[in-house]
Image (cartoon, rainbow, N blue to C red; front, side, top):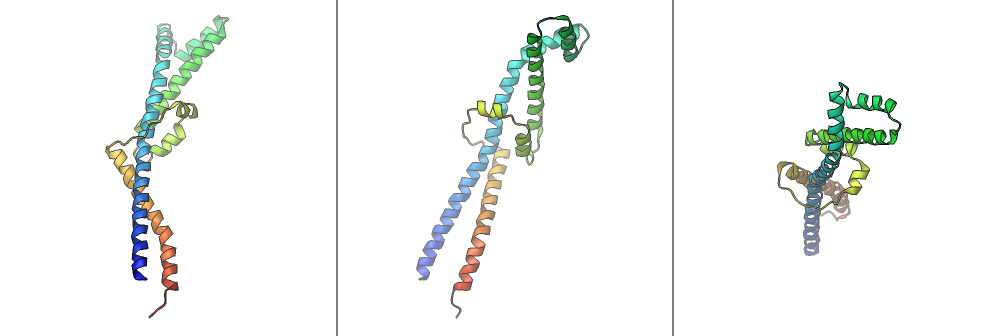
Length: 172
């Protein structure tokens, strides 16, 4: 009977190790996903850059901020649709720039939460996520966190089971 218990114990340890490796691989994807999101966000900002820079250049030539220049132009021009488009582009550029800075500058421990707060659903949907493994300090830290978290959860699950097993076994 003890031999059967040892076999099941060995299988349980194997399953626990497989689960911990799977958790590590899952946690390794966090920085990969954030990096790919930042790349898409940077591309979106770069699409808005020409409009932002040309508006800024014209506004500064006339001693205005870009927003004040657009306000002044909206009073002079009858076609406010194109001005609204430029205004939206400027707001989008500034928003993307602020999000890129916030996510990039976030410390390792806060980066997933900053990403969660600052990420935009439309950008996440535009992403074509490709799983991968980066072997940098950040990724390895997240992988280690995955292993430790999985080990802790497995311990929490196994502890009551072991305790029940001790109570039900006959005492000699």
